[in-house]
Image (cartoon, rainbow, N blue to C red):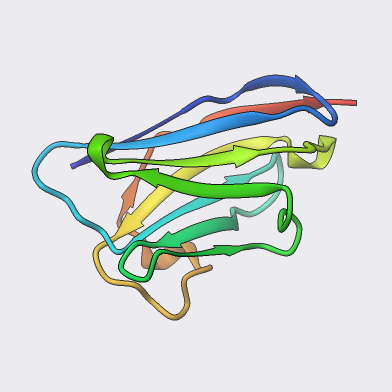
Length: 124
């Protein structure tokens, strides 16, 4: 199973981007599909996630109201629409997945499937 993250790029502050996380390979139906980001010199942090069985989304306070996670089951893809971007959103964004939801879903250590990362740069 491979996760492929894409959609990053350079955008001005206030702009928008949509990231995609596509799963390929053998049948893979994770209950948890999440996004983390890692800025230069900082630790990887939870951004948002989708619990597929409950169709429920979760967001870090720093992005709540600006980012929206959705899915397209026909394409086995999860999206994260990012709006009102700020320079502090600049980071490499990673998608990750886990078969079973974990209550400690903001901790990167619980995820064993990761995409390669896509760089988002927000200029001021």
